[in-house]
Image (tube, rainbow, N blue to C red):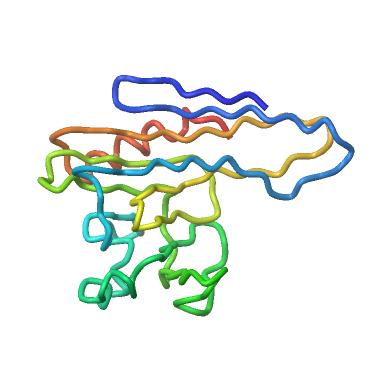
Length: 187
């Protein structure tokens, strides 16, 4: 495995080159990136973290309005997921290892997640070419779009994720930037 992060003019590109030197086929490998947003991007109640659907932007956690008034010790820890290629779970909330996982009831149309700064002047957005779902751990306000692929014996695959950090742009502008760059990512 080779991993590298490259600083670009509008963010950071993460590159993973994986080679299967075994005789086993892996149906699913992924390259998780766990960018933890702190300071002005910290969004513990997911009030500024968005995903994109065919009809436009929606808050990742829009289907759980009770989160806004829940005591933090009831809301956290939590994970909030929106499917991209994976099937949408039938249960809105599932417990995994004692942690509630909230599932959005409709799929996103792109592997993209964005968080606005508290003053609305900055956007941090993560995107990739292919993933099962996008998600966040609101306690850390991380953005996951973990790229995935299958890997057969002797094969090599490259998985990339890009994180944009943009000042003075709207969510729509940042989404357009991401979609223009998405095809330049490998896998």
